[in-house]
Amino acid sequence: MEVYTTEIVLALMVSSSLGIIIGDTLWLDSLRILGARRVIIMDSLKPFLGAALGRLFLQEETNKSFIFAISITVIGILIVSFESEDRKEAIQNDRNNKNHDESIITKSTTTTTSYGSIEDEENYERNRKDKSRQEELLKGW
Image (cartoon, rainbow, N blue to C red; front, side):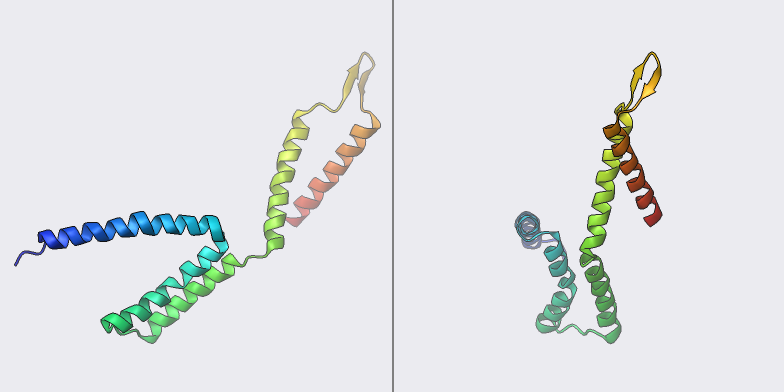
């Protein structure tokens, strides 16, 4: 008995083409249209859908440990996908502040004269605020 007949190989080629070309294209479009959070939620439901379809069409048995394992995985995905917007915003602000702080370091805020280094009031105040903001950020970490 030959395992890889021409019909089977042709069917596998068509199946992989549909899955990769059409499936991945639609998945990437869904990321663009719906956003990553919604797509992650839908993706986390795939194991349940696969188990239900396997049971319906292939009469596969699912046991309690299988359902429990899928449930734990989905709960973990949902926890990560519903991560607090405040936390994400704080991380983004921290990144922005680092970029701002690096630009401050590279800019000269003092004026040198023959008498030494003189900072004007505006630069002094801005540097003081930046330094206090850095200290607040460091306290949070």
